[in-house]
Structure formats: C-alpha cells, structure tokens
Image (cartoon, rainbow, N blue to C red; front, side):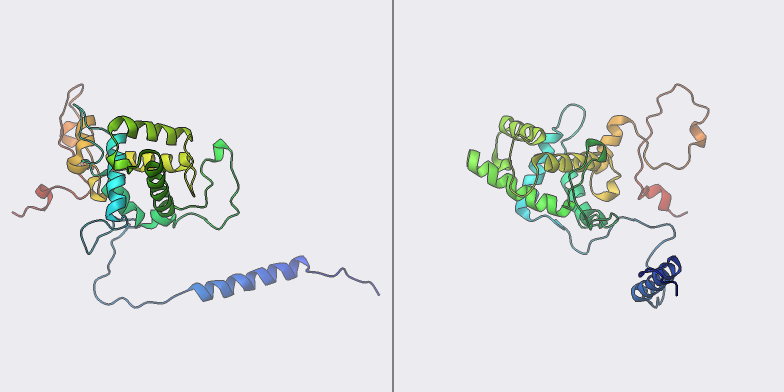
Length: 248
C-alpha cells in the first residue's frame, strides 16, 4: 500500500480556507434597519464630524494650551498671515484626533513593529492619539525639569530651542521618540493651516487668501477667457457660501 505524507493536501487547504472565510464573514456581518431619512449622503465616505458640545473634543485644557503654544511657535504671525494658533491649527488637530485618523482606523496596526528604513517612513505602533497624549506629557516633564516651566510659559527663544532639539532628536522624551513627536505635530500643524476651514483650521481661509487659492469653487466659466490677469477670487470653503443658499 502506498503511504501518503501526513498533513494537508492542496485541495484540503483550499477547502479549509474557504470555510474559514465564510465563517468569519458570517460572524462579522451585522444587519440594521434604517427608518426615515438615511443619515448619510451619497459619496460621503469621510465627511467632517459634527460635535454635540463646543470646546476641545480630545485635548484637556492643559494639553490644548501647550498645543496652541507649539503651533504658534511653528507658524508665528507676520506681515503675511496670522499665527498657527489664531488660524485654528490646534482646533484642527483636536478634531482630527477624535476621527478615524486619531487611531489610524484605516491602517493595519497589528504588528509586528520593527524599525524601518527611511524609505519606509514611520513604523511606530503608537497611533496619533497616543503620540499626543504621551508626547505632551513627556514634553511637559522635560520642560519642568530643565526650565521649571511648561513649554507654553517659555519665552520665544527657549521655545525655538526646544523645538529645534526635538526635531534633531537631541531631547529624550519618556515613552516616545522626540523626532517622531515633533514630526507628528509639524505635519498636523501644516495640514490645519492649509486645510478647508470645515475641519476646524485655516480660520477665515487665511492661508488661502495669502496664497491666492480660490478654494472649492466649481464653476470657472466666467474666467476661462481671462488670461494673464490677477483675478482676486474670494476663496470658498467646502461648506459653500451663503450666496449658494439664498432663495429667490
């Protein structure tokens, strides 16, 4: 009698895999009954969140003070624009952290986590919410130990030095890499400064006005024939203009 090797054959493996997928799909499938008008819009896959209460949604008051100080230092007010704080960058970050972005809800975050190459970029297991919560606490501890003050209470020169040292990795933060924390805040600050105001930052479209960016305009027919002219178009947010909703 011919003996067959023990273990799965290819056919058995495929059958087993198919059965496992079917069970998994059945276990995760959920049914729901929608009554009345659906609470979503067509193509609205990642719309801005709406909040039941004003104020900070993720940051504590103390954390918000520190974040506002950081974004104000990263984007100081000058003759061209307001500061990152006045542009609402901290509010933008706060709103992002309570969205899917805050826990990297769209990314695979199960590990393994190993140091990557520069081309692979960020390989940290920490999601943005953790990076801010851990990073702000660690930054506060560092500033208290070195200056006996929080970052927000430091003069501008010392703030610049702390941020420069964070960027270089010259500071050791407890629980998080200093360069990772700095890059996270810098990236989100720039996003908040240039994003559509509907997400909390770029108040009054200050950065768009500075750049001459027209925003979310949908109709340029009146301007197609106007070549080499400065149009000075008033920028529009995704939320639209009051002129769009006027009756009559």
